[in-house]
Image 1 (cartoon, rainbow, N blue to C red):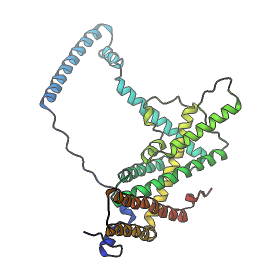
Image 2: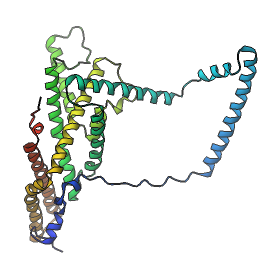
Image 3: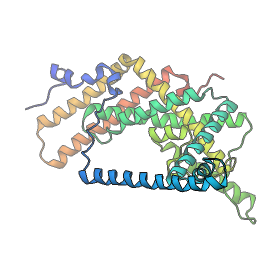
Image 4: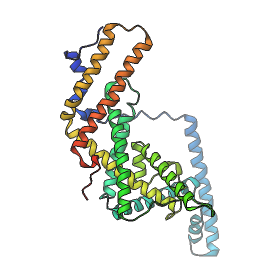
Length: 339
């Protein structure tokens, strides 16, 4: 069966995704599967375990009651015993993680206020929620041969890349305005010269920037509130250069999320204008695919090249058109801030 021409009703149906960019970034409900049935052996073990623990507990209470008769008021010894019970190691670890996350998030919010980014705790909650949704929406389209997921991924990646670069420049300008240097956690040897220290510092800043720009929406959402998943509970001490660097990276992540959300809102608001700018481009790719098929494909490599070329064009032309429109409508996309 031959493919539809770009001007046929079937071709219009093929390009139907252009009806609304809202569809490109629409969430999908996922149903949770039923929990697996628990084996009867496990249930019997749980019952035995509960009985055993209950019996031990009752015996311990009786022992404590006997001790209390001669050592103090009723219940005093039992309370002391319970208070001295050692905390479960995993529970202690989780408690430390929560406490550390709360503290570093507080420092991030304070830094936002100090630098004048205009973002507060409520803003960060909204930003992280939208970034997590974006991650789910765009991640499935990588290398997809389905048009809508691929377009969704291509546009999302362009927004992620551009918002990252703009966030770095914004943070740099804010730090310069506040006369605040970037913290340097490197421990230099005593004999290091000023030139060596400066080269090392520039190299570290470049590496930090590269890592930041490569972070996806989910990692950006985590960093915006101070979560470094690889650290677990082993965060650096507060007020150390490494801690302060993490705080500033969190500020940059928040700015990045703010920008990505603003850029996406422009596309949702002006979807009809964006449609007009990309419809002809997509039509040309569909026509090229039809021409190749009409001429006859002589080999699998030839067919693969045609398809890969069309997909690559979509990866470039659609996000380029979308980003061009964003730049026309949103001053921050051009690096212009109203402050």
